[in-house]
Image (tube, rainbow, N blue to C red; front, side, top):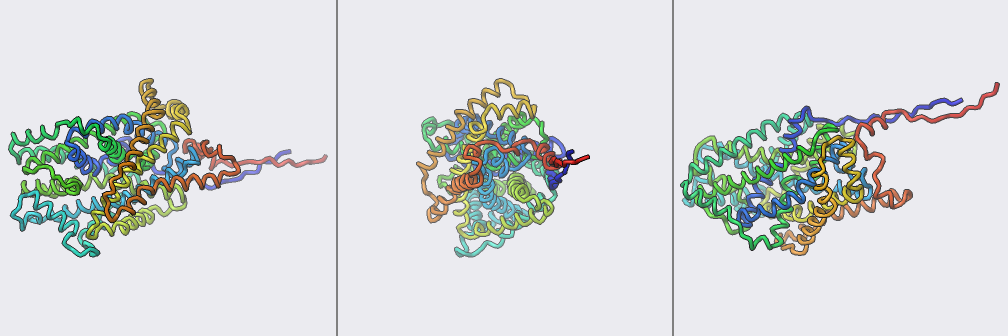
Length: 544
């Protein structure tokens, strides 16, 4: 005779979800479109003579952008879990990759937040009757704006260790606005994105028209033609191809963990291939539009591109104040800086959401303390951003930006492609996408992804990664040692993850490190396994 003895397991916490496909699409768009489009892309186009940069950028989109975007959406949607557990499930030996993504994103979030604080600083001062960067200046609009940004915003006039209190206040407001937007959950973030994205895309074309109206029409067109020229000699330089690759990774949010997190809230059979194509195209179009707006604004104020590299990096926060002082009409300054704020705020929301999701996935009990965890995370990021509010904080900002974008994301993207294409296997990946998730992948797309994942993408990423280290310029000055540590940060985390996996799986054999675990399955299967009672047969001998 056999009796069934049930073993009831703990409950499996339900994740959040989007209310509809529109909010899901807006979340991805808000994450991808940010200060990377409005600040870094125009800067790189200016650095490499306008349209010259577009050629390697479009090539990097085809080789890196589309394949990695598709891959990250596929893995996140299939498993419905963040990057920290995702890579543990697909290959325990690469468990450190997901944590490296989240921890590197945490560093990125620190300096990204100060960019949002700068926009708030300008927004607050735009409410004045007279813009402060045009009050006591006999210089032209551009020089007046540059002087204001360097001396007042960055605090070059203050002592070395003194904190710019107004900038600190702006950083605090930016941090707790993030907490307020995220604390209500994924569904509430969708409502916020309707406003922030809508406003940004309405103002951009209007700003382009305003720059034309305030300029000499003939001079405006001549300047724009100058920015559209191509210097074929520069295409032979390795730097332009490496920076194009890093810009694609940066602006699309690849190898950050954010796309995995956003996709984890999708429905299981959502057509993410369609979203991938549309989002990559929209992001690219936005980058080009932002660049045209920046360059046309320079033309309208009669200013040539600055030659100083640091001034180029600060282009966004000098050009628009200069243009607005020339327009000299309220409420334009407030509207424009709100637009820039919304661009950055959208991306920052998802970045912080990725960090908190990693905490909730690792420590499920924290899901019952959602709001305190979100507020605590934003507070920690605020505290870590305080050094950026001091004089010289811009050098810290540039050091973080340079070393994270130049090395970290290339390495993590390479690891991701190797795991999916070689460790798990391309055919296995396409099987779950086509047969289990029912995403229509036609033969043309199939062969495109096969060629990319198996050959072109890993080789291109490896070449860019090697080049970025061989030709590292060491421009961080006194911050160089710190910069090297930041650059090596993801490498160290991945290696530590390998060591941890070896120790934990020693009895199972090293081959198990490269095999998916039983948890590499859709969330509903993990939920059913956790909720269903396990039974054991107890044999009892009876005599009559």
